[in-house]
Amino acid sequence: MIHLVLLSLIGVIVLFILVRTYLWNQKQSVEVTEDTKGDYEVEVEDLLFLGQRDLKKNPYRTILCLGNDPFSDERGEGGLADRIAKKTGAKVYNAAFPGSRVAAKSAGYSGNDPIDLFGFLYVTSYLKAGNLGVLADNLSSFQDERYAQALQVLQDGAFGEPDLIAIMYDGTDYLTGAPPFANQNDSDPVTFAGALNLGLSALKEKWPKATIVVLSMPYCLSRNADGTYGDGDTENLGNGKLPVYWTKEHDVCEMQGVSFIDNYYGLISYDNYKEYLTDNIHLKDDAREKIASHFASAILGGKETAQ
Image (cartoon, rainbow, N blue to C red; front, side, top):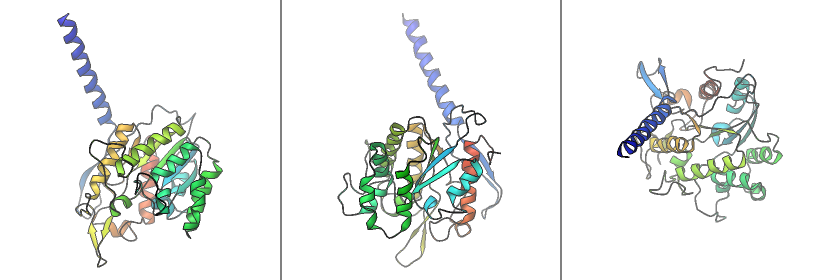
């Protein structure tokens, strides 16, 4: 009997090691050859849980984009969604709301800040419930037509059950002081990690067959009162530095078994941000192109286009 118990214990340990090794091997490493710091190797922390999809027989035909400014800054030609469409061959639906963030400002909407309703937590909650009326009722709070355009995409529902949902939020949660996480509560809606966790669960329930991919926040800078910029890698705005938010984004995706595409390491840094950002956070075309190429390569098995 003792021998059977020992053998069972050894089997459990071996299985655990194999699973952890598999997860670790999902990560990809790329070599960056041009950077202001010189040649160096950067480990891009991609986590890919894409299954064994046969892309020739069953390509990604529809992609729904949720997020904020990386998608919403340019909704037309040359925007991130447009570049993804051209590289993947998919029909891409852009439902990103500018200036929104992942975390809610309050656990229950108070009515004081309508933009809170258009963040990831509430949008995914309303999608799951099949009721977007609250968002429509609050459109008048915004003069920016991109809110109405994004909501119309969701209301039309032309994507049906999307083949893939691409989610990308920039560092707005960091810049606006959202707590990155809460100890012993991985579903706290007013934290970045908790809201992301809740939103991903809602999308899984709404569209259980859809592949979900989170594109990580890229590097950004803080803006000081005197107009100067602070380094997001080292500047703590009260709830942590930018890499803390990236780490929590990565961890939630791993916990959920959702693919995570790293746009933080090896792309934009304090040394080269002027090449890729229009200010402290908004992307230039070169950054959009690199992010779209990385996304396409990840979901297409190493190819940057579907052709």
